[in-house]
Image (cartoon, rainbow, N blue to C red; front, side, top):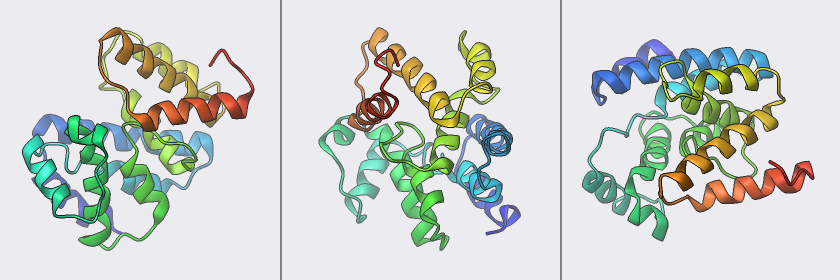
Length: 193
């Protein structure tokens, strides 16, 4: 799929700020793909499309989900903002004809992560959380630290930061994130992740 054909379609549905995030995320994802030996083309497409449905209203996300094949979880129903990934993946597959499951998985789980996700999804998870326009205080340190880690260790570190943030802010945590955290712990044998 040609990025130059996709870009106007995505840009049309996003606010200017979300478009800037998308471009920054795409650029950072490509650099991470090169570091971690992941297919650059797949990562570029997934990053471009990851937030394609993010600027929909919560009501519109719920409405579109009700009309789709996607089966919404109780957690997503209560936290509909998390539907933007699955909706964007479905749009990419049904309307844009993207059949590459690594791209669709990356789009679907870019916010929460999920156990068993592949390299493209892991790179997009990192890029979305840490792209250079992200200005939370720990971002520069996390960006430096992940460059010295394996891909799975980088995901574990970033996920751990995200979980701490959500807990400290009193926000709900996706079951996908909890399952990913537990899988990473189990596979590493390190209980300090």
